[in-house]
Image 1 (tube, one colour):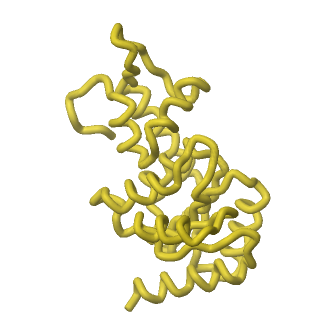
Image 2 (cartoon, helix red, strand yellow; image 1 turned 30 degrees about the vertical axis):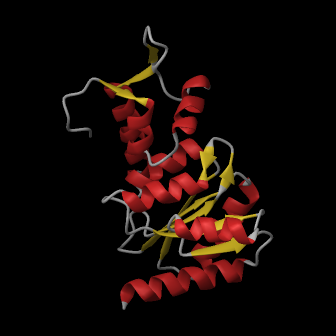
Length: 196
């Protein structure tokens, strides 16, 4: 849980806690996924108890999963549900030492980076409510998450996009449509490099 004495947090502070953008936090407020009060100056403040509830809920859902031995944890984030389901099942089937958790929701993605503690995150860099470039940068700049390896996926694979996402911290960028074996091979390389 949060250890400071603050009772309310700004959207920027919440974005940092969940490794997401301020825009994503604003969208969560607008859609009612997170409670907030508005100051006289028009700024949003999120109560500490609501942030802790979200963290607790996320931890609880992860604890209810079947306990597994130490495995490589992989987080799959894409707004296309079929990609998330297929890639999650494919990776778990191809290697029983992978524990894979997938989400189509940028709100959950921010929570899961903190609570699931993935070794590798496979992230669609363009999703509603999420700027993949900013997410990569935040993951890599936070001491708690900087060791997460990032595989970026995108349907907008210009040379500039690929170079930018790598500058922000992604190890590799894979273009859509992709072969699932290609993703698995990149995961294998990252796991192998980590274990050397």
